[in-house]
Length: 314
Image 1 (cartoon, rainbow, N blue to C red):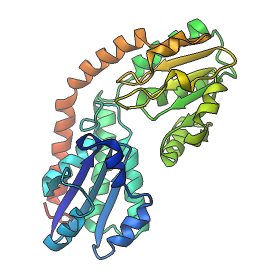
Image 2 (cartoon, helix red, strand yellow):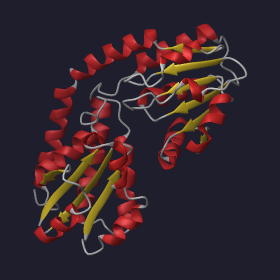
Image 3 (tube, rainbow, N blue to C red):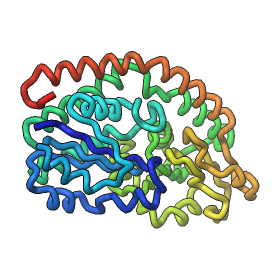
């Protein structure tokens, strides 16, 4: 038996084709793979991964769910890959990561489907510990200065946040912390995410928010005073044609790749705040790179700890 990870990232093929390989319902995956005792499906907006304890024949069966662009990790390399994901250094945006929440939820779903045994239970526990240690012992997810600059920029335009309607688009860490800070100042927060379940988890993390269906995004933009864009896309997620406002709209783009089309500034009563934030994000990225050795040290310590146990054949 060996532990394997079969991984597909959306940059490996056109996004529409990538979407074809997603399981619309995790229960479909668990039904189709019920002959394999231990397996877990992890899906985000940008990646699809299966971790499983398998014999050779079972491994060959699992690979049929993926195209040739897939990547394969086995045993210790599979563990390291997962730990780098939850540790925010394997994601497309360094430190800007909500994957540890997705991973935790995926293991819960697998457990509900009776797909977790001793090996994956130990792996799940270790992944949680890695994520917790990295957040507490390193500065890889430190975005406080981005939030501070964003709030100061908003307050220059809106002296009072009380009862202002704020819409958070996406699940980037900077956006979550900014939304929470605005809620504490009396703002009314709504959250929109392509994945509604992830949106609910973000809402729980912020507290006292309304989570909306993505289909209602345009109407909610029109009715907002402040729009926070915290997506991790490689293209514009907020475009001029999406904005139909009756009053002033402030847009704060805390996305690492600038996900708001700058042409929105040409719309009357729309203000895009990102010049100072851009500078801080760049400075943050440089500081985060210096934290990578600390993160990698924690990961190797936890791999060693997992190997010392008898649950997983590494």
